[in-house]
Image (cartoon, rainbow, N blue to C red; front, top):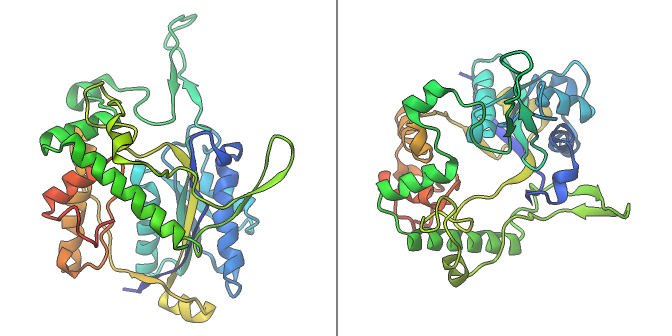
Length: 346
């Protein structure tokens, strides 16, 4: 099969809920990394881009009707360049890259821009249609995150636990204390702060031009959501599921907005366009678990992809697990027999 290379990666800064990027529509937001990717790679003939594949978990508001295609057009790409939007919820952007890599391996594509966009700040309230004429029991659903329009059969079969509830389930299942979660969260923020101070994100960050309420132009070029904190401060926060719970706003991920993209290319396209590959995509895999412990999903996926690639965790120099909740990363690490303080982790 054809080899697949990641040749470039860009992203907007990520902002806090209702922060700097909340004034930008998601289709406009998705256009930013696509446009930047083309501008950064001068030798790329845009007519050779086979497809734009973007992940988007919401798709209930301005990001509806194939936001990848909308973003591609808004970025200035020729109308002949296609786009498709996929949804694997929190894994959507990663899955877009995996999908693109498979197309190149199968020699059905040579150059792809893959990534994702999400604007949780602009997620709308939605209302389903009436099931009977003149009904007066209409219900409005918030699409920012979590379940909506719940299927009663699904609720009976699996429950409809919220994301924080699934984290509490994992904390109980793996006997993870509040102190362990807060310490992980504290260390995570410190790692980010150190990387930011050392300018580690400079090569990937796209400065975004914004206009404030007074019509002044401002440049948004730093991640807005991360924050410096202390363990004593984290310890004072109440649980988000219940007051005595272990999952808090301090050891959970935030609600924010942003967009990112990577440039995928075959070995032939790398040579033709004078790309500078950053990494090679070996393979990818997904794994399913019960929805009430959704955060343990990386475990079967990791085991599956290691078996496919004939590799082990000992072969890895860097191991990254998505930080939906501290309890989630800790439970995954325990299941994989990884020391939570392993320097390769996150």
